[in-house]
Image 1 (cartoon, helix red, strand yellow):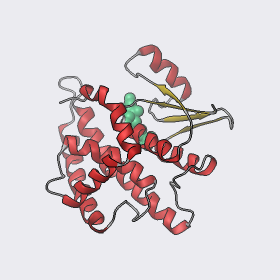
Image 2 (cartoon, helix red, strand yellow):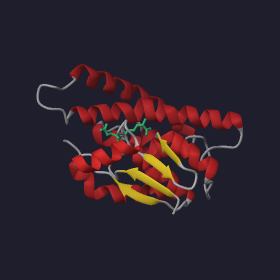
Image 3 (cartoon, helix red, strand yellow):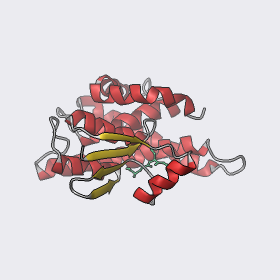
Image 4 (cartoon, helix red, strand yellow):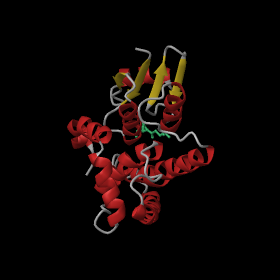
Length: 215
Ligand SMILES: N[C@@H](CCC(=O)N[C@@H](CS)C(=O)NCC(=O)O)C(=O)O
């Protein structure tokens, strides 16, 4: 098998790529990385010294591809599957990328900031940063609610890369700062994402690890 994904099932950015792979039906080998294990971390840093996953390794093309959006673009370019994840039309593709960035930067990243702050050693927290993250998340979720009032998926009728980004970002955002009852359109969008087989599978695979989420 040419493709291998370095990832962890609990990671939101990794789930984003898992959804893309499950949507496209592209075969790949799973390499679960436990960053808490010094040997596994050291081995992963040899693959990608930045130390963040997901990372895709393509032996056939001799490419190491980091960054969830770039991995999905790479898959769409070199391993197109049954679900086209990036529109062929340039204007549609630009809009898809804009929404993908929106979910990564203004939903996923602030959600991650709120969660990871709880893992910091006592006295090393960043309450100001967490307040900023909460404010960004609130604004972003209000925008998602408006945007999804008349859409099934992020770009309209067709599921794509932005929905891969939205699914884990909204899933964990609902856990961290519940929004679905106040933002009904965003909440129903999350319900549709959870019912989508690709994301349902990623969530089922994450379930055994959810207990590791800090309270
Ligand atoms: N911009 C990156 C973000 C990746 C990222 O933040 N991954 C997190 C897990 S969700 C990670 O590797 N965290 C480990 C660490 O920071 O030590 C992407 O889109 O792939």
